[in-house]
Amino acid sequence: MIFSANQMNYYNYPKLMAEIKKFKTIGVVGSGQMGSGIAQLAATYGFDVWLLDTDPEALSRATKSISSSIQRLVSKGQLSQDVRKDALERLQYTSNVENFCSADIIIEAIVESEDVKKKLFLQLDKIAKRSAILASNTSSISITRLASATSRPHQVIGMHFMNPPPIMKLVEIVRGADTSDETFDITKALAERFGKTVICSRDYAGFVVNRILMPMINEAFYALYTGVATKEDIDAGMKLGTNHPMGPLELADFIGLDICLSILRVLHAGLGDNKYAPCPILVQYVDAGRLGRKRGIGVYEYRQTPESPKKGKARVKAAATEVAKEEKKVEAKEEKKVESKEEKKE
Image (tube, rainbow, N blue to C red; front, side, top):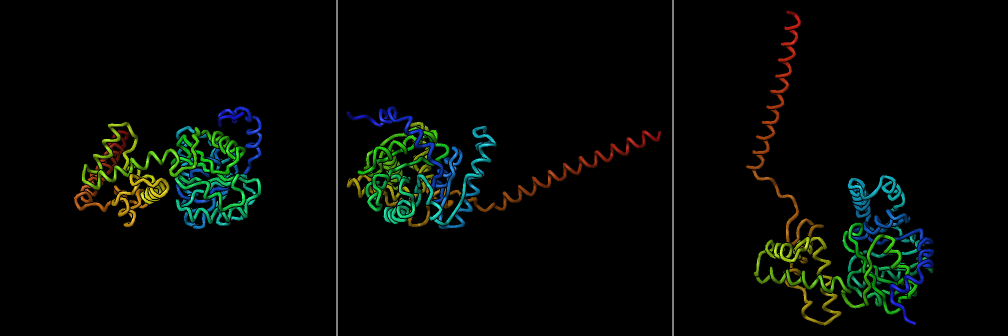
C-alpha cells in the first residue's frame, strides 16, 4: 500500500512526535540573514542551538541582530519575556565545527555554491553523530548531489526556509534520490513544530518557489535593461497591479542580487532553457558589487546620502528656533517667580 506524505504523517504521528521530542540540539552553519533567522526560530521553540560561522565579526553581528529581532517580537506581543530570556540562553555561537558533534540535525545556510556546500557536507558527515540529519537551506542546488558527498545520503534533505525565517510561514522540503521516508517525516514534523506550512518538491533545479519567482525577477531586470520602464514603475506596476507586497526589483535587492544570479545560473544549467539566462544588467550589478540591501546599494540605493548645505542650514535654523523657544519658557518661569515673591511681600 502506498501512502501520500500527509497520510504517512497521520499514521506515524505519535512516533514522529516521540522522535522530535528526542531532539535537543540543532546546529546551524552560516550566521547571515538566513542562518541567524533559522537559529533564532529554533531557539524560540525550545531547542538548544549552536550557530557556527568562521568569521567572528559575522557572529558578532548575528548576536546583535538576533537579540534585537527577538526584542521586536516581544514589543509586538508575539513573544513573551520568558520565551525571549530562554531563547537567548539557548543560543550559543561558535567558530569550531566540533561543537556540532551532539547535534540532532544540522542545517546549512551558507553561500549558494555547490562546491562550497559539498565540502561542508563532507566535513559535517565526519563530525556529526550517525543518527544526525544533514539539511540544506539551498534554494536551488540538487540535494542528491550534495548528499553524494556524504556517507549518509538517506539522512540528507533540503529544508528551504523563506526570508526572514522567524516571520515567513513556508518551508519547502526537498527529497534527494536517496532521502529516506523517516528523514523526510522527521524533517517535516520539525518544520511544523516551528509553526510552518510545508510544501514538498522533487529534486529539480530551483524546486517550486524559485523556479517560479526567479524568472519573474529576471524578466523585471530585462524590462529595466531594455528601457520598457523605470525601476520605480516596474515595481509599482507589480505591487499595485498584482497585489505583490514588494516589487520584483525591490525584492531582488532584499534577497541579494548575487543570490538571485546564482539561482538563475543553476536554473539555466539544470533545466537547459535560455529563458533562465541571467539578464546582463543583473550580472553587471553583481560584478560592480551592487548586491542589494546588505551592501547599501543594488537596483536602489539604501545608503544615507550626505546632507546638502541647504538642508543643513535648515536643520540649524530649526534647532536655533527650538532653543529660543526653550529660553523664552525659562524666562517666563523666572518672571512668574519674581512676581510671586513680590506679591507675598505686599
